Length: 193
Image (cartoon, rainbow, N blue to C red; front, top):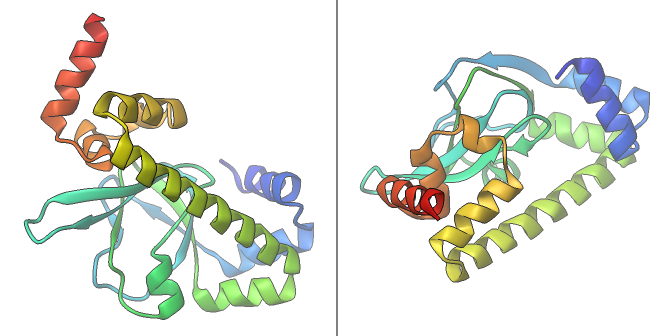
């Protein structure tokens, strides 16, 4: 996605002014990540608001047995980051890595606050973004505690059709709370039906 495409998405979908979008690009740092390169490691500081320009990121944590638990996948025009660490100013609880070569914009908490002060439309944009993220996480909790593995997988594919093509199966299984072996059996069973 080009900077112009991102700018037009901000203007059209978020009703941001051209000046506000220009200020975003002036304040955000664009970096490139190689496949499997970490943007943030658990326990590291500083942490940023992250906008995915291209590629795909995975936010995850490792439990005491070093098992990876995928929390979120960030695609083009998705925001990610450790909000707890950002707002409460402590080291990150999560790690974020690129699953494919990716480009991301990084926005520090200070620059985030400055943008919101200077351009109230940004504050509205982020409020709606956070509301939608909370709703999405609540729906995911319901799916995780009440859906069968097959229902979870079908919902994942419906909500994120591109991700199945680029995210390794072990991470999709982790996101769903099942083992990769069980996901393989499930996909085989579904293909036979």
